[in-house]
Length: 162
Ligand code: ZN
Image (cartoon, rainbow, N blue to C red):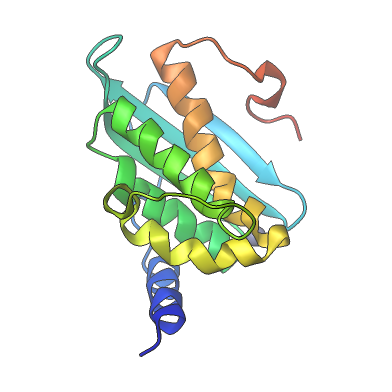
């Protein structure tokens, strides 16, 4: 089996059997993000434990609708960031953002942090789909920043402005 076929299988598998789908309680923050280009939508909840500088991502859950890329990406996000330190979750997010730029830039990826997210490598070839893949990750970043009380860079992007 070729690598890109294997990657497609991984994405399809997460799409068919998403992990973390279904909003859970309790939660610290909830955000709603939309990708108007494709019509993808996600509502995502984050619960952190610990305190400043040593937060752990206790849970990440979501409810979403949209294309297979956006749905599968949310499932992979859940797998990669739930249960790890917030620091590691943010590093993973950074790796995923780099992966999405890998078609046009030289990147040095940490495949261990990425896990199944590496399967989205092919998506980087399609600029229109990159937003689909990033939707859940940007929602997570937003929710985690709110939950940890960190200052927000993009206050106007926060929740439900559609
Ligand atoms: Zn999409």
